Length: 113
Length: 112
Image 1: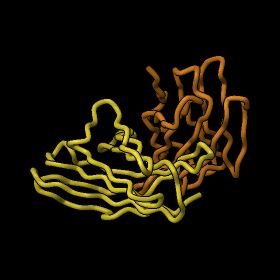
Image 2 (image 1 turned 45 degrees about the horizontal axis):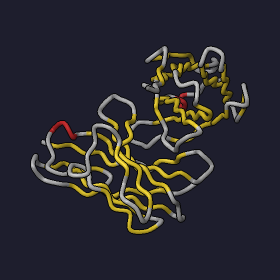
Image 3 (image 1 turned 90 degrees about the vertical axis):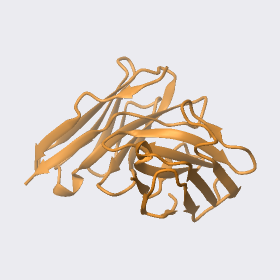
């Protein structure tokens, strides 16, 4: 498995602002993923982030709203831009250890007022 | 498209009883399945996985059953404990990609 940390663990933000979420892994991984979990719902994949290439976004998610960085094999950031209350969710990063299994970070709980 | 769904959104069991959480999937190309447990305020935690060339896999107090004929997956928890109270998600992956598709989730409540 892998030890994954996220910062911040939670935040309350004003609409129209942006928040950058960090994800740190204790080992080098090729593939990292960002998910959104809206209140009381399941996980939805936002994008796949591979080091050295642009992130691949899922249908319904765009780079302008959710820019992602992947500067090295242990770190990634997700920015939630121009936030609205509908962006209030848990944002989770995960890693694929090339065993097919994905391991998740603790999540960032975002509330937008 | 691919989708994964669950039959029971909430399951209440008595402490000590066995729990069975079900999941249906629609993508016959899926070849890898995972069960996750998510406790309140935490990220999903890996419980057990199974590949499509198997129909049963056992872990500590947990068993996953896969029926490819009817595209059904189940998680059995033996001697359910209060600490098992959580939301359980099944997820599937196809051999053609690295994406996981998650089911809707089942809330497991353990009554003492």
